[in-house]
Image (cartoon, rainbow, N blue to C red; front, side):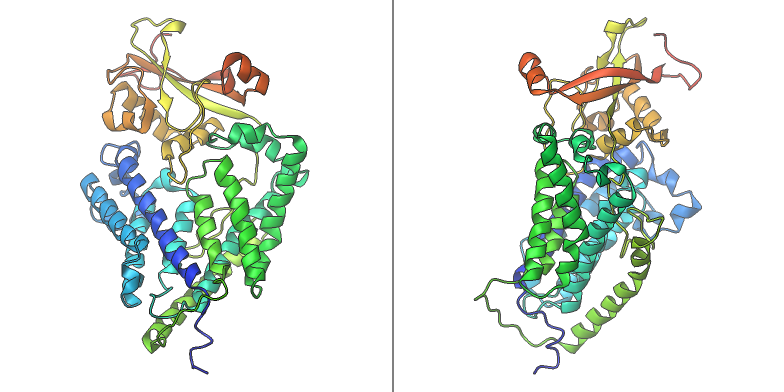
Length: 477
């Protein structure tokens, strides 16, 4: 018996390939989406400029390469370099080198994206940012093709999936009664942050089917995760159930890369098919020492999220350290019963009447009732997501007032974040924001009108404002 036999997880080569290449592919998306959106949202002239944020003592304590200097050019350089490194891992090139090569590259990806998340403020406050960081750090120690995958790293990856799924299941049971009476998904397909092309069809399915969905969700999140640690083939079956439930969420919603990364991580429990035999070289002592030291560190850091799982005041999507390692996860502990949307309108009229106001269109969130929702995930439209939270009554409004100011100036980078600019790049005289109640059309309404949504006004959020106005000086209605 080889002295490292207990350490080597033979029979998991496909799992390693999926984990390394899959997480790297998500890093490519994350870096490219950051390059496209970050400057307008958080850059030198963004809605919440990083330079202003870094004056805060809290911000200066965060690990980020931008602590000493930030520029949009530097940010784009980091993103391009990160996407290029991640793409090389997707192609499998570093995996042909010694194990320290993919380790170093994954740690560079983790460090670069950590630097972005730690200055991203509310636009980077989503749970899947921490999830990508933790996943990237963990799979950095899976090694190369010359040695067997380390068992401890595969187990830590399954522990990550366990926290992700079981934590989400517990937060639902502890939260909204709709999860306990099985009615949650009679609302959620319609009220989720960003519906996709099939969300309406899912919403219109029979109530009994929605109840089965909720039961299936509870089973997949509260029971199945325990079997990820069972012997094969039970662990593979458990992973397959998680993958199937996440695939249904991909089909019916736009949750950025949350579902895709969960599918990738679940492969940590999928064993190689019978007959696949890979010859590995003996595991070097230096690699064994590194992996065991990191595994011990992650095991120790796991105490805080473990305690959180069984806390009466369970935290959702919480990081217990500045490095976003071994976090608490969970989503949609509360289900909204009604869908509200913020509609931004502008006018070029000097003394506008109601018919003079025209609507700005967003890329992903509902607006025009005749427009069918599109598929964007795993790409993350950060502004559209924040607009959903704003419609729920979020108190974080500073970025939104800044957004209205940018629209008044016809700021080109800001307009590129939107789907349509009704003024073709020209400045409007005034803008305003109204709140609407949205509902999916019934099948009959769809046949009669061609609309995907119905909407009714639910009040003014921001009365008309013009350039030069402050909050006490409004443009005439």
